Structures are given as C-alpha cells and as structure tokens.
Length: 284
Image (cartoon, rainbow, N blue to C red; front, side):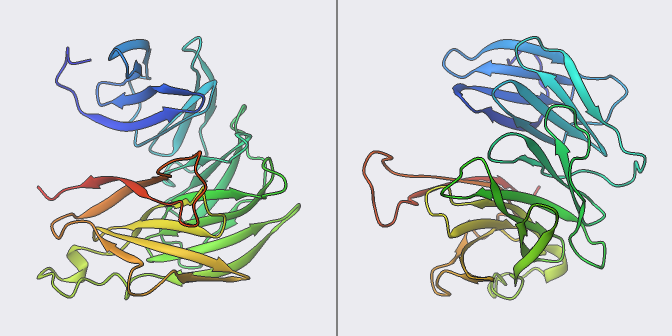
C-alpha cells in the first residue's frame, strides 16, 4: 500500500498463511497484506487516541498489537477487536511479546523487568508473573521452547533485556525454576568501535530458540551482534567463543529480530541452521 507515505512501526507473519503479513503503521492502520499480489486483504483502524504500535504478533486466527502498556487482539477473519489487555499500571510498557509455541498463551516482557503470561483468547493473566531481575531493569524480549515428546507443552523460556543478560527459566506446572544465565556484554564488546559503550550498549533486544536444534538459541544485541548459544543441563554457554559472536556490519546500531531457517527442510543435516534473517536499525 503506497497510497500514503507512512512509516511502518511493526510487522508480523501469519502462521499457516505464508503469503500473508501484518503491518502496523503510524497512521493507526493495521494492514493484512498478500505478499504475492501486494494487495491489502484486510484493513483495521486502530483506536485513534492510542499510542503507536511497537509490537505485533499473529496466530492463525488473531493478530495482537502492543502500544505502550496495552495489547489488543483482533480477529483476522472479521477484523474485529475481540479482547484487550489494559493493566492498571500504565507506566509498565510492554515490549517484544511472543506467542507460546502452541498458541495458547501470549508471553509479554515489560519495562519493569517482568514476564507476564496472558491467555491468548481473552488476554487475561493465566500464570504467575516472573520477576526477571531484582533491579527492575527492562525485559525486552522472550522466546519459548516445547518438549520434543510433546510439542504442545512449553518447557523453557528465554528472556533478554537491558541488563545485557540472557536468562533461562523452566516452566513447571505451578511455578518456575531458573536454568541458567549468560551475560553477553563482555563477549560482544567491539574493540574496533570508537564509540563509548554507553552510546552502543549490548542490550539483548531479541532472542529466538533454534527451531531446528532443540538445544540452541540466537540473540541479537544493541551493538549489532548476534550471539549463538547452546544449553547443557542447567547452563547456557556460547557455542564456540571463536565463532559464536557474529558482527552485523560495523555501523549497525542494533539487531532487532533474528529468524532462522534451514537450507532444505527435506534433507536432514547435522548442521541445519543455515541462514539468519535479521532486522537492523541503522544510525541516523
């Protein structure tokens, strides 16, 4: 849709519909776009008084948009608002939230260092909130992993934030258990950069489990680095200190969203992670 010169503030793909993407724009429009024809299939007008959408995630039947502290759930087939999360504390903004692998829960990291679990249909809290760190530093991203034997059961979540630390939690029936932490700040320090660390901090901006290798994950940091990690027992480590830190061009200020996919899903490989798709933010 090029009828307006208008910035896109968030994007999401739709599971089960590989040719459909959702784009939230600064003019408060949410567009469902068929990428084969570049035709807008669905147009949703967001509340005029609300803030700009900063996060967007889609399921097969819903699209979720987050602005400031609130999240709205729209039916992708009818374009209607079906649920809203409007917490009492409007200063605790939501960040890069994601759906659990089975689509039943929305995992929401917040500015006050919390991870909130919401029912994906009603957007009501459905589990105890996790306090990510004692300093209440920003929790900026989250990803979840399922059991190999039961793909509908979430067993682990990884979080990242402004403390430059990746944290892993085991999700148990009634509570949570810490399963390791990894401080990435020293490992991703760019010795060739002339900028002080304060101008290019290695905050953990985005994180994803490797869907092709159940013991690995990748995180993107605020100084343009990608960190490849592996798990063993209750520990998180870099895969290989010589090859685990990837620099995404020296003038990239931030890695915003990595996604991994295999070179050929029909041909098993001992090293299936072949490509990383990276959204980047560039200095102005």
